[in-house]
View 1 (tube, rainbow, N blue to C red):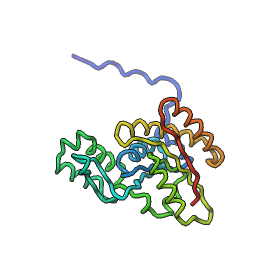
View 2: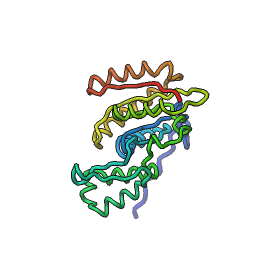
View 3: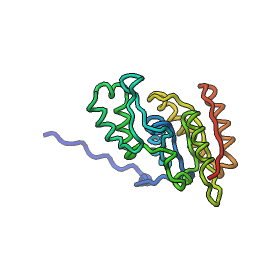
View 4: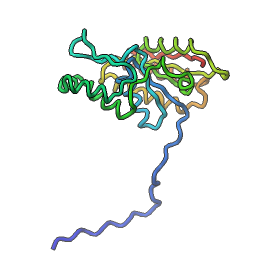
Length: 224
C-alpha cells in the first residue's frame, strides 16, 4: 500500500512575519499621458503594485485610440468606462483590436479604475493632493505646467513637482519607461524634502538615462 512520506519538521528559528504591511509612502504621485490608457496607465499599474499612491490622467481633448487606418482613429469622451470601450472594440473587430494591443489596454484599465480621467477637468483640491506629477511627453508636460499656473493657488502655496519622461506612445516603450518611472519614484521616496533633494535626484537619474537613451529628463516646480 502506498503511503505518503513523513512531513518534514519545522526548521528552527522565528516564524516569518504574517500579513506584512508595507511602510507608508512618503509622497503621492500622478502619471499623465494624452488619453490615460497606455503610458500613464502602465506606470499607474506598476506604482500601485509597489504600494505608492498613484492617480493617472490624460490631457487630450478626447481619448484617441488607433483605428484600422490613421485617418479613422477610435475616439471616446473622457469618462467613458474602459469596459464600454472594450465592448465597442469587440463588436467592431475583436481580432484586429486584440492584435494591435488596444483591447488588452482596455482590460488593464478596467482592472485599475472605471474610466479615463482628464487632468484639466479635475478639481483643484484633487490636483493639490499630488506631490509628484510624471508626464510622458514634452507637450503633455507643457500642458500640465500651464494648467497649474492658471489655477488659483491655495493659502499654503503647495509645491507640485512636475517631471517629464518623454516616451513614444506604444505598449513596448510604455513598459520600458514604466520600469524607469518606478526606479525614479523609489529614489524620490528616500528624500525627506523634495524642495531640497529632487533636483539632485533628477540630475543623477537624467545622467544615467542619457547613457542608454536620448530621452532628456525635465522637471519644474509649480505652486498650487
